[in-house]
Length: 497
Image 1 (cartoon, rainbow, N blue to C red):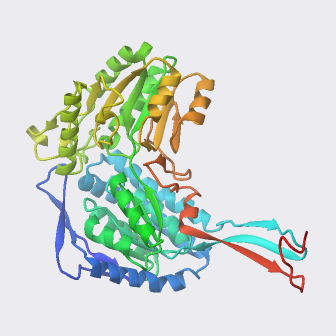
Image 2 (image 1 turned 180 degrees about the vertical axis):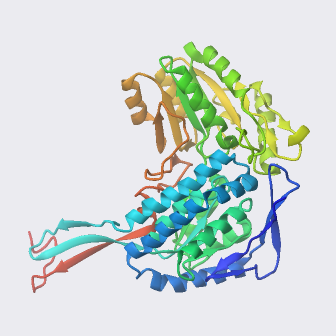
Image 3 (image 1 turned 60 degrees about the horizontal axis):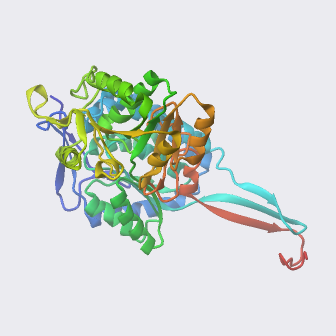
């Protein structure tokens, strides 16, 4: 039996409990009887302490040369690499992601570290000609200040890394607020930042609920930026709160992603993509394939293949190497999926496979749910429009490529998208016409890489992008600089005309 972790807040290089002394529990979704960790139930007082530490550290940290800051982030990547198996095993126990996927999650954090370590020697500005003689013009990047990073449980290492690492390389200080379901992973990651030598106050960790800690961070007058990943409903509240205080905010929210399979597609390849996109991480990804849009000529054949292969997926504890699907993260998430299946039946959808929670046998103490395939789904149904965040995929039939694109776009979200076709003309039309931040051609809707921008349109985001060099625009301000060496007053737009 694993010994439960005792997680603490990390403020100004000290590991401390919540000032009120209260704690919460994190339990194993594979078997809820196992206590994985206890962690502080923090309050506004703890947030105030973390913000003060981050604010004081910022004044010195911003003056550290960016290449030096980047070297410390590179060291974080090296330690993550050394501890990859340890972190992956904890992740599988803490949120139920199969070990192969947990290793990929940690690897994404490693990739972020090495990528943004390189950005520390760039952080490019621009030089451009002035319209006046003997005058020099350029732009530079400057840090924003104290950044609150509010992160979800489904990627408990990757997402904190793709927020924290560019923020730190750019010269900001951070306060990480992880999800209640994954305090252990956040604690290990913060320990690694400490081991790598980040100065006191530059990285801070506050555990607790979104209602208490998340809200306090969004409302705090000394926080300069909030980077939030989570539901669109909560993101809207965070955005409104930040807007009232003129605080910068980056929102990465929900998705209702679709994979189109045309009649000329490689069906076996499209099948592999559908299985991975719909059921990877038990469907608990913002980029998960929630809708399969199938051309009528191949729908019957593709559906038969999909049912055959999906029935072979192995449900089981995430720490067992033969497991394909682990559990849902907690009882509330399982109840949410059950509610959507009930709703789908009432709306007239047909359950071709699955649709039930598993509450018996060796899996009876976990939050397991069968991979589920729904047919006869129409665009008006809530099951076709709302994010489920579970192992559920809907089948929708179309008669043409144009209809497929229109149906894919018929959603309030716009994160990821996928089209399987051998027609290069269709492929480029899809790239042009799909309303999403990410489009895959002959690939599933999941599988983003850290050096490309990540985010979406409509209710998926607020115009910013994380990952890649685009993240630098989140965590820096642009400053325009003019140097006049003429020795006399020059009035732009006046003296040169």
